[in-house]
Image (cartoon, rainbow, N blue to C red; front, side, top):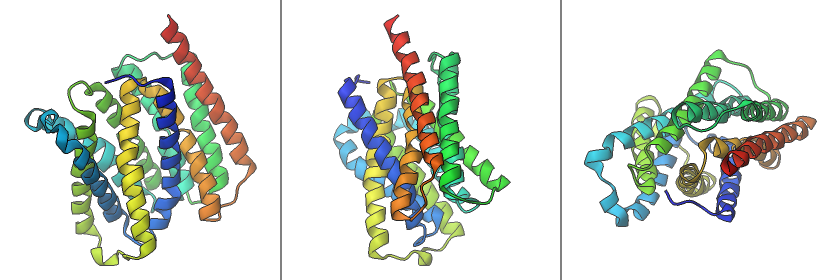
Length: 295
């Protein structure tokens, strides 16, 4: 995959972190109008169809007969497991606590990248990843309240596991597939599966097709799903997966800050402490990255 300039990488990272941070309070607002699995299926399918418009002129790179299993595996990990378990799990515990557990994903990603991608792993990087997760936990504990559910914890860990494995899988197979086709097809396949499951367990009649929900759905489908996933895998394909993963620790911070305005969640001293730990985390991961590149 073509390497990005430092300026391009930072711009895409900024876009991704802000958009995915805003997604949490927006999704929480949308779930008051719709059942969760149907909502997950609708937004991912719309996002995939939008990207399909971009992918169609590159039809020669599709190679469906050769790569169909790669698209299916990516859809299972990145869409069905990540979004499916996430939306179900949010019904068992508070969004803040749940997101804190899901964002153990960068720690898992660092381990998986070391095991299967040959990326460096040393004490400083491990310490940085752990600090980042600690920062997320501190922020989430102070920003939200919720009952602790063993079922919710398992679903959150499953969601994080799917995302971590899916990211490494896409990185590992990146030279065999076109990135735009990979993202669009994983969204379409995953969205159709989620809609099928949702149709079996939920009712379409429970969806309230009101303007706030429709506008929310379109924003999430276009920016969070379609452009967000494309940006994420563009970054993963152009650099270290674990480095990109370290920046995702900023997402809960933005989510909680936005929730304080949109959902009237209180800001606490935990946010300041959590932000400090997150900044330290990114510093440790990136210093290690740069030093290795200079060798």
